Image 1: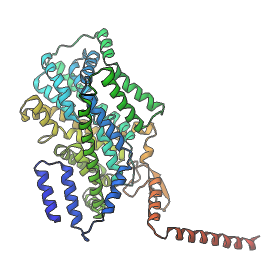
Image 2 (image 1 turned 120 degrees about the horizontal axis):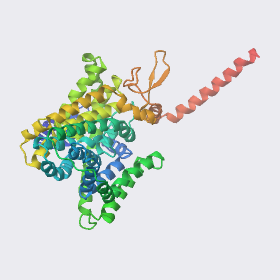
Image 3 (image 1 turned 45 degrees about the vertical axis):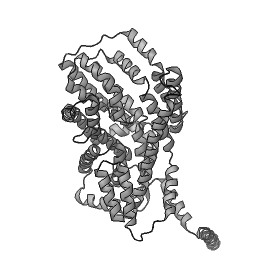
Image 4 (image 1 turned 60 degrees about the vertical axis):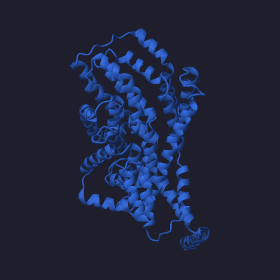
Length: 510
C-alpha cells in the first residue's frame, strides 16, 4: 500500500498536479511503510491543533482578501497615474513606473501572475506607444512581477515564518522581523531594475513627460486614500499602537471601505460574494499546505532525515562561503520548478538545520530564500512568470526567455550582494532591536551557557535554543511524565532534607 501511494504521488506530480497534494500522499505512504504500520490518529489531530494555534493564520487570511480587493478595483490605474506623474520626467520614467508599481502591487497580492495580468496589461501598450523596444517591455514587466515578495504585507513572508516555526525549535522568526530585514534588499532589487529602465530610456531616446506639479497634485488627489494607507501603517508601528494582527484587520477594513464606499470600484452585492469565495478558497488551500508541512516534518524528524542530510553536507562542505554558493544554486533550481508555496513546504524545513549548522542567521536565511524564489519565477525553462507572460501577451515563450535574460543577470548580481553582505539584511533589525526574537543559546567549552544569535559567530548551530524554547521543552517533558506530581513532591522533600543538613553543618562552625 505504501509503495503504491508513493508511486501515485510521483505520477500525480509529474502530470502537473499540485505539489503539496503529492507531498501529502507521499508522506502518508512513507508513514504506512514504517513499522509498526498503525498510525495513531490522535497524533494527527494534535498536530492540526498545533497549526491552529499558530498566530500567523489570521493575517494570512485577511491579507489574501485585501489583495483580491485591490486586484479587482481601480487601484492599479490610480497607482500608475501617480507614479508616472512623479517620475515620468526621468529617463526611462514610464519603465520605472512599471517596476515600482509592480513591486507595490505584488506585495499586496502575493502572486506575481496577478500583477503581470493587472499591471502588465495596463502598461504594455503604453510602453510600446512611447517607443520602448518590445523585448525590453516583455522583460521588465515579467521580471517586475515578482519584486514585491520582500515588502509588507507579502503573503509568502507569513508562510515562511510559519513553516520556520513548525520546522525548528532552535530559533523563532517573526514576520515583522522578516519585513524589516527585507526592506533594504527589496529596495536594492527595485533600484537595480530601475537603473536598467533608465538605461533603456537613454539608449532608445524615449520621449519623457514634462514634470507638471498640477498633474502630480491631481494624481495624488485621485489616489489620496492609497497614499494615506502606508502613512497610517507607519505611524501605527512607530507609536506601537498596533501589532501585526491589528495591522491585518485595519488594512482589510480600510481597503474594504475605500473600494466599496469611497471609490465605489466594487459592488457589494455583485462583486463581493465572488471575491470572498475566491480569496477564501486560496486561504483554505494554504491552510491545507501548512497541514501537509506538519505531517511531512513529523515524518522527517521521526526518520532523522535532517540529521542525516546535515552529516552528508558537512562531509562535503566545510566553509559557509561554499555552502551559500551551493544553497543559491539549489534554490534557483527549486524556484524555477516550484511556486513559492510548494517550495517553502518542500525545501525550507530541510535547509534550516543546514543553515543553522553553518551559522547563518535565520533572518538572513529567510531573505536569501525569498530572493532566490523571486528570481526562480524568471528562470527558464519552467519559471512560472515566463508562461504567464507568454500567455497574457500572446508571445512565444522563447521570446520571453530572451527578454528576461538581462533582468536575470541584474537580479543575480543583487543576490550575490545580499548573500555575502549580511549587513544589508541585519542592519535594520539590529537597529530596531528586532533580532531578539531569533536569539539563541549554546553551551561554552566549560559547560556554561553562552547567549548569542544564530549566525553571529561562535558556531550558532542547530543545537542552539532560546531560553523560552528550553523552558517550554522542559515543561513539555515534565508534562509527559505520569509521575510528575510525585516526583515534584519527592524533589521538595529532598530539598527540605538538604536544608536540614546544611543547618546541622553550620552549628559546629558557630
